[in-house]
Structures are given as structure tokens and as C-alpha cells.
Image (cartoon, rainbow, N blue to C red; front, side):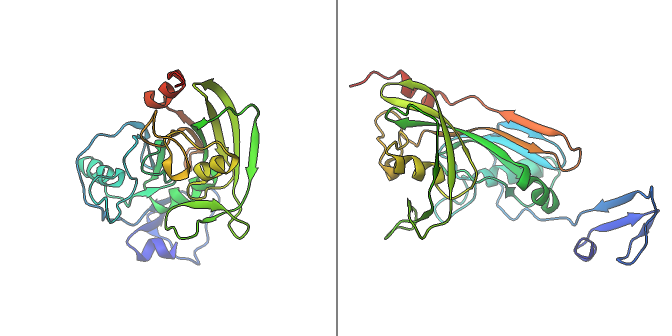
Length: 259
């Protein structure tokens, strides 16, 4: 309450600003106005595939080859840049908060919270399901429970290591073709490159993922897509479930003839 008040917001009851020691009665209606935030990321016009939007959340289907946040190399071609432009066009102004950060070349659902409270409340309720095409034939469902750490002599690549952080990945084969297996994957933890690292560790690297041993013959990016998300709406209490189509270039891997 103090943070809201002194950062430009307000907490009102019966037409008066509430203080921390004020006593409330049953049936009192409290109106909370959150402090205004500035979108500090440069706005760049672009298209958004919007799956859901209201005053609290924006959920989009991110294409492959697009970073979520600006980096030294990518300053103006990110999802954050496009969302910044989009919100200004709608007369909104909020900090870009992506609850799930997909790799640049991973496509699929990205959840954006429009304020800090929504971000805090929604994050623990989020469930994500991924689709990945792995090299080789995976015959059974399985779980990888193996710690992940930064690989030696690398600033990007991860590896399974005893001194890493616990990471748990569940996978289920759903389709086969051209020596590949399409898997449905869900996570208990959210480590950087977790799916890519774990599937490579099992001996089934993702197609197109040359960083982790996959071939780029059939696809020029890792065959990984965040297909669906579920979450509990922080205000309405509604259970929101959204899904997207699997990108054609990922589906086509299973159709390619074996050379």
C-alpha cells in the first residue's frame, strides 16, 4: 500500500485515501489505482499475433527469429519493441514484463503482464506445453531430472552438471517421421535452454539446434514451439487456456524423406 501511494498511485475507500492504520469494515469497497509506468523500450511498428488481451494481460504468439527483449545485437527488432509501439497506439503505457522468455528462434506463446501486481499473481499459476521435434526415435514417455549449468568456456551453451541447478523436464512422443520424433514437453522448472539441453543430453537433440548437436538440414532453427499456456486470471479468477497451431516448418520435418 505504501509503495502504491508514494509512487503515484492511490488506495481509496469511501472517497478518502486510506492510511496504513485505517480500520476497514465488512462490505467496504477499495479502489486501487496503480502507479503509472513508463515504457522505456523504443517503439517500433510491427505485427502482433494476439491470442488474448485485457487490462491486465497481453498474450501473443511470437514468431521464430524474433528476440523477446532487446540485446546488444538486437536493439529494434524484438517483441518488446513491437509491444511498446502497440501500447502507445492504444493509449497505454506499461513496462514490458514477459512472464516466459522464449529463445529468439523458439516460437509460440508469450505472456506479458501489464503491471507488477498481475505479474506477481499470475506467474505461479502459469502452465506451458511445448512441441519439439527431436532427432531419433523416442519410444516411451519419460522425465529428465538433471541439473543444468553453464557449459565450460561458453557464455551461452548449457550442460548437465552435478554443480548445476535442478531442472526437470517431462516428455511424451506424439508423432514420428523421417527418423524424427515429435514430442509434447512440459517443465517443472524454467532453466535457460532447458529443453534443448536435456533432450541433447538424452541423445535426441532438437532438429535445427546446431548449438546442441542437431542438424540444420531440414529446418534452420531449433524445432521448438510453445504451443499452449494456461493460467489463472488474477482479477476474475477465470482459468484461461490458449493454444496455437504448430508452425508448418516444424510439421514438415516429419514429412521429409530419409536420405
